[in-house]
Length: 241
Image (cartoon, rainbow, N blue to C red):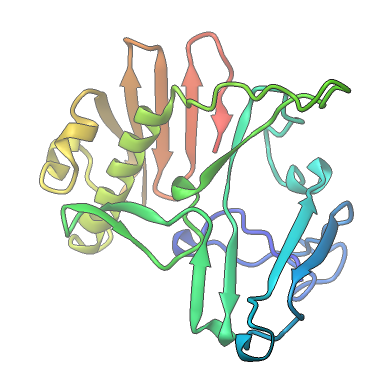
């Protein structure tokens, strides 16, 4: 089945799919434009025994995602232009859940350990990899890939550093979040957060918005207690992650 989450399970997200809802229901989601293709390059399907053939099974998969499907619930969604990028990851579960792996390792800041650690959790969009969009290939060859450097990455990293610190702080303070970044000084990485001007807006004890500003490069990152991260560049519109 096809599953959509509007936010990670750990932040209160719930499944949207045809497995839990019917067409027309709020929780219903389905894809219609997906295209897939597979090919066995070597060996036999569902046979991982190399003793008979002496060769490992090798296969390939191609997936074409429809923008109409991927942008279905995106409030600011638009078809990406050449040179733009999204965050993306791929996960595979084998042997009925005993084996899990992801294309981009899910490494995030762990405030209690005081270091970056790997997590067995596919639903951490801040740890996803990048997909960069290029133009159509010409008859002369492939399209020239644009730069894949994300200039907003330091601000994104600092914002999520604060987010994970807030999670740990709330667990130790009966669900209440810190109202000032100084309360998080033992839970953030100074080398990551220190270069930025960080403030926390809190309407009440149940939520917050952390604002990370870097005037030198004209970038402002905002992250909420629900892990919603937005990036604003001077004179640009906000970009949702």
